[in-house]
Image (cartoon, rainbow, N blue to C red; front, side, top):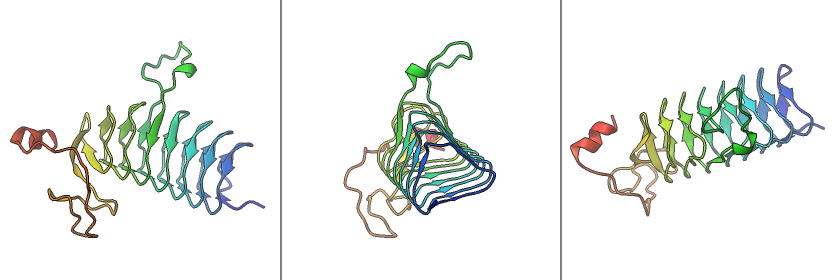
Length: 193
């Protein structure tokens, strides 16, 4: 008996593994060899390619394509129309399936709407990628990044609140133990606007 929900317009290829309590909505396609964890929500028009691994409790909003080489860990949020790549130098007339670069979105991270993640650049635990950002390098744990290219412009708590300079969350009182220091000069502030 099927322990997940798939809308009648979705396509689930034979060989895809889907966890208990997961919901897959209109016009989505889950390919053979992919694994989706428990309690995930897969929005409308989502494509999940062969070999993709998605953890438990993941929320994927509408119009997201997750290509071979991308790993999504537990409790990740992927905003509408965010983009993953898997080849750094694609050409329509050159086969590059052996050149797929791995990208890991680590536990609890959130990626905003229309953000682009260039392949090979992992997103750290509980990091927050702003809407429309273009990620061209690794994002540290708990970092807030935005812009083109994306830059670290602050830190965020596990609960989702932006952390003050003390790195003690005003909402849940947790303390972030280690974080790369931010420049305090005006030029840094300009880059992060």
